[in-house]
Image 1 (cartoon, rainbow, N blue to C red):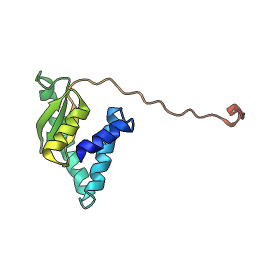
Image 2: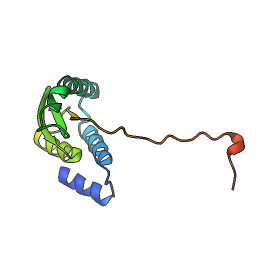
Image 3: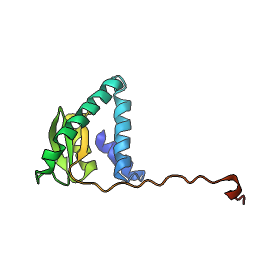
Image 4: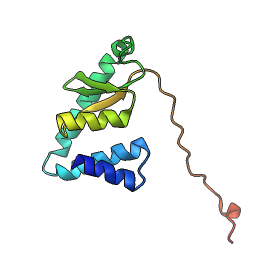
Length: 126
């Protein structure tokens, strides 16, 4: 089923990594509707906290530096320079369980354009 979903994402034009990841998460939530979402969020926060605690030591290890790591039960279970490949491979191996994906190293800040606020006298009608 996962392979079919991924193929559908490609057909539909979901080419950006974050869009693929978001769709995989949405599909996971739909498929696991009986799963306690608040428990999943708590587990996710615990994995994120574990990543923050070991991030510096991971950055010193060349095998992780510049890669994304999958954290489950407080430990690194896999790594890859490609975030989407890591997510897909990890969920395929582990099933849809709460985990955290973090980047080891320095990331460039992401700039997100914000909408501009136009004053009434600046708005022109065509």
